[in-house]
Amino acid sequence: MLTLVLAISALLQMTPRPDPSQTAGDLQAMYDEITETTLSATSAEDFDNFHAVFFTNDWTFTDRAGVRHVWSDQRDQTIHAYLDAPVDSMRDVIRRADLHEGSASTDVSSIVIRVVVDAEGKYGARGASHRVAVSTPMRDHWVRGENGWKFQAREQVGEPKVFIDKLPPEMDNPKGPITKFT
Figure 1 (cartoon, rainbow, N blue to C red):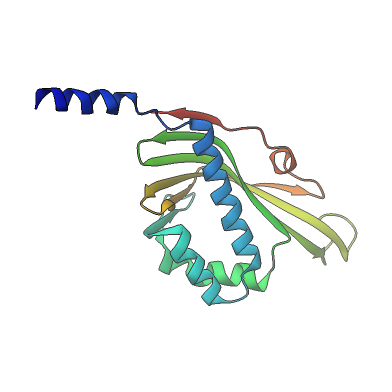
Figure 2: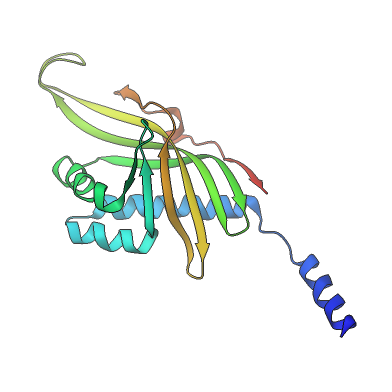
């Protein structure tokens, strides 16, 4: 019996830790898939369906003021924001990933780009079209279950930065995330 326990212990110690860069890549792929699904959504049902697939049932969003919201609080506002004012492009770019056994925290730049008509002349000539990119720093929490990664929580950790007629640097040229496994 002792031999069996020692053999199992030796095998467990030999089991390699997950490759941090591979796990960060998997999470970036999840962000990209969520983005594609969001951009292709055409109804409230689409949002409900992909939320059920990618997010945990207890998903929360904590705003900059520290107020925590559950999906049912955010649902209608999120759906209308995307369906009433379509997004031209968006991307969540991982800047840092802290990986743990079965969970991960990522710091991301959440970037949303819309083309707007500047009726008031806020960005230049009245009536001109401008590409407005908003980059918001977020900290996200993920859990790994039987069926892969699920998005559990998002917290806004900084003020949004607005870019007029240019893109945030990480949009087209993202640097690889700083990744560590703890």
